[in-house]
Amino acid sequence: MIKSSSLDTLIGLTKNNAETANQRLQGLMRDRQQAELQLATLKNYRQDYAVRLQKATETGMSASNYHNFRQFIATLDQAILQQNNVVVQLEVKLQNGRKHWYDEKRRLSSYETLLARRTRYESARNNRNEQLASDEFSANQFYRAGQSH
Image (spheres, rainbow, N blue to C red):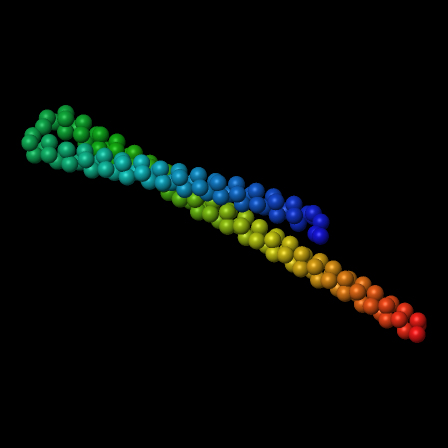
């Protein structure tokens, strides 16, 4: 049987790292989705206020109300710009998270391949040793059978 080794330890640690990277990646995906929803909400809100402003100007409004509308829409534009930046930053973090997760999965695969090779090697070595022992036993049996006649 294969005994525990440093390779088994590396596999365990790498599995933990890959799982941690996966959890972080899932969190980043949720964060980006939430940021995109907030951005869409802000854009919808801005569109709604632009329509309200258009209707209000058609029916007539005071200069102060017009100024307040324009100021509020400008504030929404600034919030949309900031939220766009948040989405872009989260996308970069998400790409880095994907790369990190992929690297950990690739490292884990490499270690598992090495373990499989080691297992095959040890199995072949054990089979050879068993075959040698069996051959030696058969040769001894044959030799003993020849001497008794």
